[in-house]
Picture (spheres, rainbow, N blue to C red):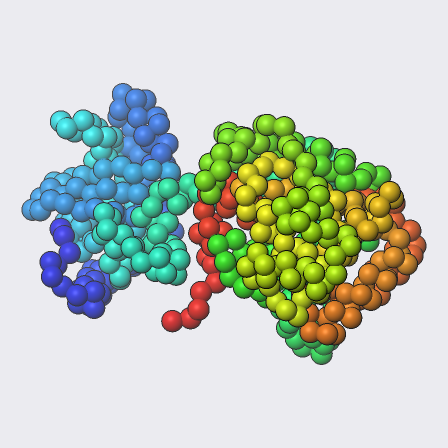
Length: 489
């Protein structure tokens, strides 16, 4: 009952197609639309004591992951999402046609079978088949269990096979589902309600990022795929009198690939009226601890060489003071030339065309690599925060914070700018940068400025992407996505 040894994949496919035709000649449908499964394999194993005593028949279905035996006795291991179990096929317990079908089965085929449960002399829980039906004939042979997919690109391109052969990978994505469910549950429990905002926009806003452009045929206009999780839309909801909203969804940024960055990914953002960034920081600390416990069962992690405990007290790092301490430069007064000179001195890569805000941030990003966290980065210069409210005691800084874990930024929040005149001026500055060739600079959103002119209460906002999950799972973000975008073969 093994594949033909030494045969090429092309030859094995041809043999399987021949078996497929033989099934049809027997009057069997190799791809029926129905199944009579009544029991999941995991439930059968869990309730084995009752089933063994009662002698009840079970009706299971799944994929054959191994076949062994010959003559009138054949064993198979059957796998469904809930578990694996052994099945034995005996010639004297099946019809002649059913046992002929056994000879046409291969590893990878989906079948259903019904029969009582018993324990073999070797102590293995087994279903004694009294009927069998083909549910789907696999044309391509599966990779061998113990070798699997070794090439990293093949693993990502054929993720369905990697998931089938790698139980740890399945658990990773179950964890990811729990991660987003925990996020949603925490916010709902805190009185937030889930909003849905447009994924197609005429003005891409809410972040510094280069958007994807597409064409809307019905309106005959170019539109942008959103680069934030409805930031400017959720703020409009604050104008409308809503007080606590959040959204979890996909957003798109036409930027480079790295261990930490993708162009198509999930993001969460919440907005909270009558609260400021300090209120938000306290909530976010609780949120991260809750997510960690619900997803991973712990608040302790080892990530990129750092040992982190989210249950510890979160420190606060002053942006300007830390750059001054580590780099010997006051970003509040330094000129663009002085910042560029410092970057060159420290051998930090940067784009010579970048303006002040991006040059400052390049300095900080070099520093953050050594920060374990958990920590909040505060006191950002206004140049790096076009949507955050200025600090009353120092208008050159803003009421913003970022979550720092394992040398990376894994969350961003601030007191939202609700002064329409200040917002318009910052949009004009960003638009000028964009006109000068900065594709990541923000666009002037006149409609949003007009909404602010009707009045928006004091509001704080915060967001994180699925990169947070990838970090906590200690995986590159690409590996923590079910089906990452791949270049066509």
